[in-house]
Image (cartoon, rainbow, N blue to C red; front, side, top):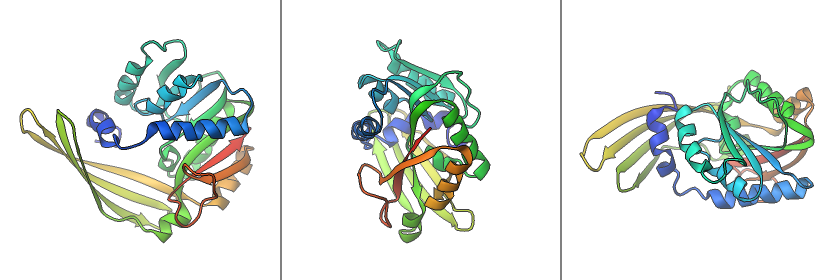
Length: 252
């Protein structure tokens, strides 16, 4: 099972039910408004189950979300009810997307860029973003920030959640590959069906790349995207050794 398989999509929203999507969208909306004038169209690269996309639509943007997982997109499609003209989704890898249209803003959230493990993948993702931006448009993405990852090394963690149907226990065991700037996050997931008491065990591997300013600057230069600003996620201060999650704003 890969990290975006059938089972993952079923418990994804439960697993991240403590994630404050509304505050995140308010934060990104503030960044958009402070860096653009009258942005109306938005592309969400790696939209998952569409929660961010739906909330951006509620804020008045015309939103198109793309994701690699058909199972997650099935959930995202349920969010279109009553918003069919302003909220759409389609299936694609972010490195070969070609919608033949351009947007005022592109966002890629929840560490989607950190899933681009190679320089080639990252360059392609940036090139796709550039090709889908209107002139003067902005690209906002978050990622694992290298200085903080190496200061506060990944550790084994356990997360437990449940709703009326299932109980989920997830063990995360990281392995750091410092020469590749990648953390292998090995998940062991136990899902209990509360109606039948059946327990399913699944394993997942998420290979997460962490980035440093200089390498991102080189890639921006290569694809001709202009660096605008960088922040600690959900703040308006520059990233530091405590900022595991950072956000950058680029302009076409």
